[in-house]
Length: 195
Image 1: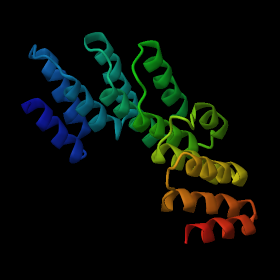
Image 2: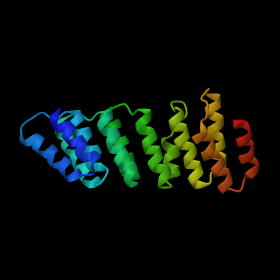
Image 3: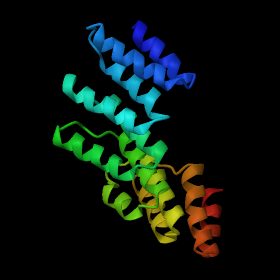
């Protein structure tokens, strides 16, 4: 617990090398590293140095079974650094070890795909039947960055069919996609449907 608290404090104060050192000392002291320890190390180090964060992830797989917390931290690291191929690799690795991929991880990976303009990969990943509000919003933002206004409009319609109420993020992303594609009548229709 002490190592975890100290490592988390180092991460918050942007002293990631110290967090990495604490994690190494945890192993040297022959203390059992927990998923929380790995999650702390991934979060602290990954924010600043993604390669080191993935070294921590490799160390993890040697001692602990990966879980959603750890893989979620790794996905967040990918999102921070625009590493869409690594993010997709994490999903494959999770599937290989039969670890359930939750909506938070899916949304994080959709977000990195959206930010890097990898919309075709995002569409392949997106599962509307299983999606929640956050995943739909991430998928709509993909349409926003690629000017795929019809995609954004389709996702809004799918949300409503599934009785999910779009929020301001969803509507804003769809309107922006229409704006970028010069489909202002559709943008206005979306705006008016929200009022």
